[in-house]
Amino acid sequence: MSKVTIPIGPQHPALKEPARFCLTLNGEKIYEIDLRLGYNHRGIEKACEERTYIQAMYLVERVCGICSHSHSTAFIQAVEEIAGLQLPRRGLYIRTLIAELERIHSHLLWLGVAGHEVGFDTLLMYAWRDRELVMDILADLTGNRVNYGINTIGGVRRDVTPRQIERVTKAMDTFEERTKYYVQVATEESTLIARLSNVGKLCYDDAMRLGAIGPTARACGLERDARKADPYGLYGELDFKVITDKHSDVYGRAVVRLLELMESYRIIRQLCKGMPEGPIAVKAPRKIPAGEALSRYEAPRGEDVHYVRGNGTDKPERVKIRAPTLANLQAVAKMLEDNYLADTTIVIAAIDPCFSCTDRAVLLKKSRRRNEEPVLWNSLRDYGIAWHRKQGLDFGDMNRRFGRMMERSSR
Amino acid sequence: MELIKKIVTWSRIKSPWIIHFNTGACNACDIEVIAALTPRYDVERFGVLLKGTPRHADVLVCSGPVTRQIKDRLVRIYEQMAEPKFVVATGTCACSGGVFNGCYCVEGGIDSVIPVSAYIPGCPVRPEAIIDGVVKLLGSLDGDPAPQGAVPAPDAAEPVKQGTAV
Image (cartoon, rainbow over all chains, first blue to last red; front, top):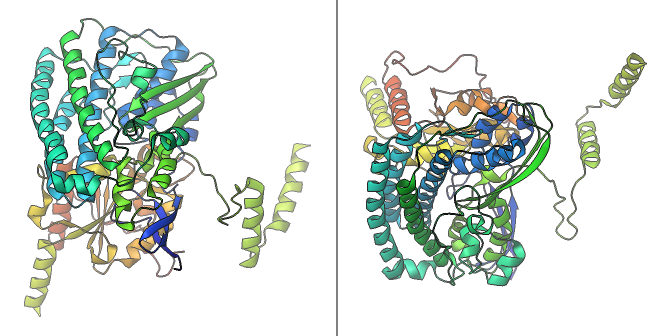
């Protein structure tokens, strides 16, 4: 049977972000997938180098609007490590509290999206209705529904009142009750189980080899969680389990996320109970000393890695962000192989992709299937010159004259 | 003729179908647009329906600064929409480029590429603000002289020439 190639995107109704998938089909099954990213690339890493640490922090928060606290915390942790700042306990508690609330909102969001992708819109409406409760709490604690802006170098910007703590604890009861219902739906609703089981299989070895992280890896039985492996902030003292599952398919990923919600409620209860008195931030110097740091953070989608290098001024010299989705994309290509075309959306949605996180840098590759090699800057430039010449534009002579002029002026 | 015109305007206002396009946003505005469609805010009350293709939609809801990669695609999607069409810029980035102003891969706000009918600022916009903006845009169709708060389309925005998409 001859192979058919179907291009999807960048504008497509399945996900809310632009990405292009080129699926080569063999009958009804997917033979090969080619993924094009970069539509959301804005150049944040470079922009950070022209901004002060405080400005860069707000910019980094806008790498992604769903896990915004993850990115700002990962960045701040690296900066604090370079500056050698010791955070006050209360500041750490508040930071962790927001982090876990963010995990709840992100997982509920995913549950809704997953429901929508398999045509179970009731689940979308239910999950997003409950998500509004956690959005209310976040707005109450930080002042904004998304992009909380609560972090600052050396602590947090807003204190919490005992009444707010009480409200958070009370809300956890509601969440727990609702999540129990979702767990019941996921484990008993036969249509949902049938739709999600054996879809997008990824075995333990492949997950290990392709470097899958977050719930995607944990659903393959791989115990990978930066909160346990390399405890940052308060996670070393908190009592929680790393949820893993043996299903290795989309169903397993759903179960892992639902059970992780329950763990998040437990963590939040502990945080609310043990919140100490004291200051929420220490004074941070405007200029951060020279040095470099790598910070790991377990975002809702997986491990988020930030690298920061300071040079003694008030601006970072280099910032590098490795978002969780980037690590999981290789796994997606593997999962889709030999799957049905109709399962594409749910398999891609199952890693909870976030392309605005992922679009960090651009690497152009020649699209010849056999020998894929990166296009180097010089050859790209030559290609551009040749292309313009074909259109009747030749800047070669002008460039040479300009070069000579520059040479003369420099002498 | 008057009557037919009135009926067309009425039906247009009662069922604006939207298409949402992320032009390089950080996802926050996109999620808030979806949140506006779910039970708490439920814009379907006003007949607003999210569509998958630009050919079915009346209103193009854009979020985020226009990146260089997405620019041509945005123009193409705009051209695919049937007349009359409206563009809503949601979020500060979509209005002006916001925090991403000056980034090497960012063109600027939506109005640097296609004409915009309504601007909704906020980082990210709250769902209430989105509803308010859409309702005001629809109100302006009814012949209301630019309602309070809604910004009319700027004359400065260049009309997009047909066939410019690459």
